Image (cartoon, rainbow, N blue to C red):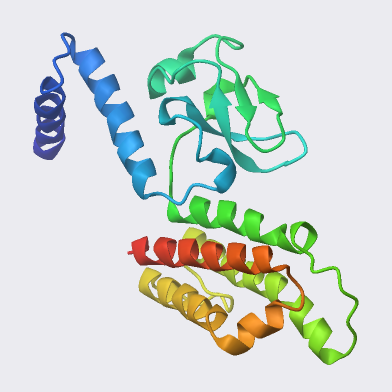
Amino acid sequence: MFWRKKREKDKKKEADAFGFTSQEERFKALESLTFAASLAHANLPAYARTTPSNLLIQILCKGQCNSERWARLNKPHPGKSDLKNAKKGEYRATCLKCGYVAVDNHNWHRQVSEARALQALKSEIAGMPQKYSAGAVTFGAGASKAQEQIPTICAVIDDAINALETGLDTHNLPIKKSQIADGLKRLVAATRQPAFIGLVSTALTPTGVSELERYMNELEQIANKIL
């Protein structure tokens, strides 16, 4: 009880600095500021980065994506409780990936966890073979191995997501977050080896190779935040 009261007191003191008159306004403003600050350090997927933070929300897209996506609200986020209690249809969220419009505001959220960041990043990486295919017809074991690299990266990220959510590794044994982070960092290090770059260059265009490098940098950033 003491710590709960102390947290509320600290939140009020911090919000007072912004000149709001009511306690409710203070807390709503602080909530928005905290969310905006968290986005500055989050690994938002490319499709969501140009949307103002006060319009961002996460939804379960029931359109073409059929997965959790970032969406754009039709008007600024009013605060968690007000959004949850708003009448159906007052707030609409348009999926920034496929354009699906959601109105079920009771289960939207703005959490930016490592598992969610990994899921969004994996979705981007998974689409690379179609988006950045080198197009050349190659044969032999080398060609097959090159085409396996993106699915392998996605499988490792999936394993990390499951481990974060369950606390268990692929053998159903307990795993620490530090071990999950180390595994992701080893994956990133492997993709920076000349042999890997040469191999994946036979499957992806030069632009695709550059994008993969950027995605691996983002993966490293997420891994560094897993504590």
